[in-house]
Length: 377
Image 1 (cartoon, rainbow, N blue to C red):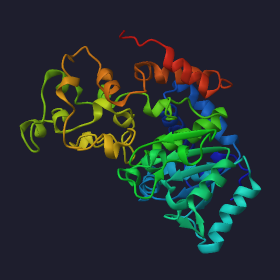
Image 2 (cartoon, rainbow, N blue to C red; image 1 turned 45 degrees about the vertical axis):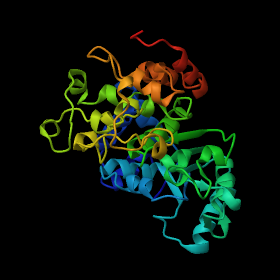
Image 3 (tube, rainbow, N blue to C red; image 1 turned 120 degrees about the vertical axis):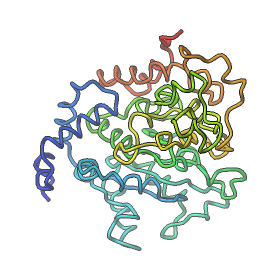
């Protein structure tokens, strides 16, 4: 297919109408917490953008993030992304195998230095020289340092690529780490934790980059504020039951059947930052709490260690005094640490302001987000 044609024309050949394309752009604006007036700007940018090379690395992983990407069946998401990007290397979905597959990766790195996007899935083992994960005779540690070191931007998708995930859970026999530790000082790194990450957020990061020529504003952990700027609890449809003291006490009891709060069953929503309640999963079909299962905090640091046991609630001392008018921010901050209340109260607002000034760096936007005073103080 002729990549010189405008995106809309290429999509038309796939049977995707302009209406569907504009709906996709509007959905991206909403996910990025941008006003609706940004929809035409996103559409114009995507129409004119050259196809950006992308390489997707997989290391110690379950391929859950790849599955999340491939399960985006809303026709415009996968098909538009595949038209926007040139996926030059992805072990799971690419046609070549063996040496030819590795040649695709090497060719991209050598021919497009500083011009391709690297997506990393899975943790990187470092113990014993990194021998616990090798591809084509090279260690994951060697590959990630070369590929990400020469990339235009790197996106670490999923808990494992962020901080090691479950392979790094105590006692961490392979010395598994995330990208930021495997490649210290890496610039233009976006962390997208989750088990797995939400493909809508990954798409939004790429769309933001192509529209504004910069990565979205991030928090101190390198997570995009539009996706990780609010505590789940504050947007949970069961929040009213929490405030009223109506809790599920046992699986299958009356409260469970009536959709009461899952906090006492171990739900980690009051201490987890994510847009799950608004973006949902499986093309906006549902999400864990909507399916009557508590949040396990998979977006939080080292969640395999810090959020377990998954079916035990937070200490009672951390929720005393919270009523209808109170925010759950205090609960989350007491446990997570390092993420200020300003992220929850003004993170997305600051991100929007940063996007109104495309030349501002995402570091400046983050600084603004961390210093503004929340409305409820």
